[in-house]
Length: 591
Image (tube, rainbow, N blue to C red):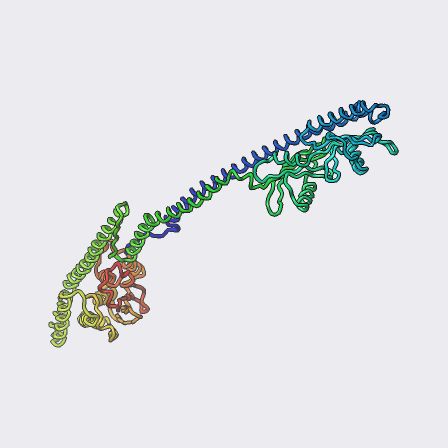
């Protein structure tokens, strides 16, 4: 009856929810991007700071030890050492003691001139003595002298017996079978080097190592086990390339570490600082904590907004849509109420007003159709009575003139029954049996008029259909149409048939004639009139009147249909409903 479109692909609530999630997600990813950028900036800053520290440490160490190497070379040409190495027998005891004292003083000055020197001594084979900054010490063994010779030729720093040595031999370019005149040995302090390595990264878990490029020695800032030292040194020597400095990212014992290194060509050594990767992110721990709190807060806001949107917007709209769907299905008893004082209360109030007005309109339209049906019935009665009355009186006059008293009596009885039925107005509906008897009386009257020109055959009314209620005057106008329009000019051999056919809950009444008045064009025109809209301005008389009243009672699928009859004339099929419950339903709801 009424159609309210409620077809939509996506409701408002998912759209609002997705829009809010999109905004929160955009802010969230912006925060993630800023967080990653901050982490990268801090990482780069810490790496640059440590690289600078490594470079400064390397430069300081190289400068210090380079000066020591230069001084130990100069000491080879010291006057007192030269005299003790070449002509000790020519020196008096006093001269010898004075020379040894001056040599000790110079050695002490060399020891104190560097932070990394633990001890300095000089071995003079000719006098078989080794002079130290602290006095006389034991003479070095041959293996130690061989190590010092390596320091003199190829390696600035050599390792012997877990000690780091810087040595100088005289003569400097010794060949085989040449006697050694003197050997200067400078022992570096591992503890002092270790302490200086600790100061490179004096905070956090960072560690440092100074290692020989040839793999002979290494000094760690922290005490490690032999296995840890060997494993770390093997990894570093394998991965550190030929670049003078660089940064490596490696994993140690399952933890990610960053290695920053710088080579020293003077010392033939490399300084390496390494620390856990998460240590450089320590300044971001607080920021990261706030970031996760922001993430949880965002999720909570999304959920709270979703619940708020659902309760405040989606649920009232969904309630309104359900109400519209009920109205669309024909339920006009629905009413809405709202405890909220917002726009939805106004919408609900206006919806209730609309439904109330629809109820009034439906009732008015239905009553108007009923009044129209009754008016059309009265119109039909007023049209039939004068027309039929004239013809009947002429027939009765002719019979009385013959005179044929018996037929006059029968004709008068049929006319009485006919006009009593047609003028009775106590009800707009009668039983189908009463309507059928009235039609038979009409046929009997017409037989006097058409005499031997027309024959009429009527089947028996089915017993199950006799008691059904139908609108008054639905059969007789159809039969009248056959006589007046189909067989009016027929001289003889006219035929009219009326048959009944029951289909489920419908009854089909078939009217046929063999008249020649209805051409195909007239049948098509009549068909178009029967299928015209109910509000079209057409004259609703005769079979159109019957068709309209049947549709008013039973619905648009009922009424009359016309076609060419097999016997040559017009075929009219009348479909009426056997379901009596349809009588109390408004026409719009039976459609």
